[in-house]
Length: 292
Image 1: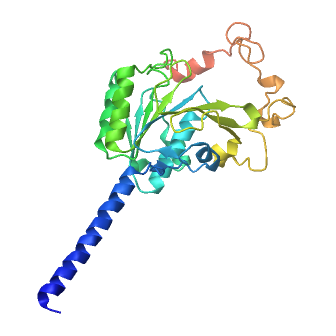
Image 2: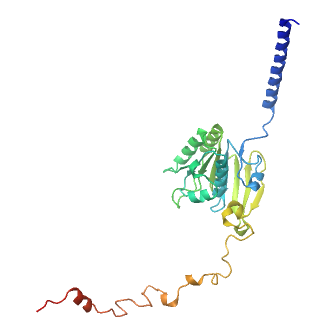
Image 3: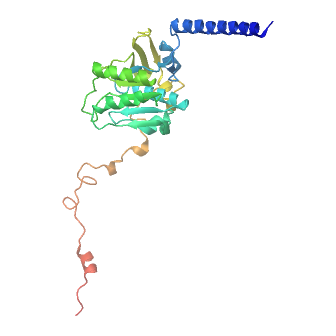
């Protein structure tokens, strides 16, 4: 075989390989996206509720619930999961209620968490958009539960602002978590509702999902959210219903002789009801009379 024939045969082989690669690329592009990048919360029961097996990256997800329903703790679990992968996160703390020691107790690496506390309520959306659009953070949490003061209500997100947040998450490729209240929900692609169930624990329900799975719910014990409570044996969160008086330690009870009713010790008002010691001896000692 001549050199020209061998070169022609090699060229035909290379062309067939290129055509096979092109066909494979076309098949992959035409196939539906079944696997999406997700951020797992570390709570298996919560991740099992989600259609993608975790919180989807590149989208805005809403955690809606009343106060003390577990919404903030669930967001902290997601942040801790990102930190375990050595990734950065940001937290836009609108109400200024994020307590760093409690976050660290749930596994949050404070050195990898940027806390932003805008002075004006209208700056929250802007800050979250800029953080999510930058692409530097795997998870950005936006707390919209209420205003800076306790008297302010939850902040509502307009449709235009919701679109900006969704576009920023899609462009940056990170997870955008919106903490909202039932009276002021946002427009997240995925909405999870958290609810406290007293001693039973807390529940998570998929209220809204564009990937399916709406209506799924899981009830979890409190120790799954707060392992440091030490309730793995099925104990109750608070035991104050029975025997409250007997459960009080003796050293905390006031004795009858130590009661104060606003009138002084033993019900007396020094200087009025009880005689005061004479001050003559003290004055004589301080200012002795002149010697004659």
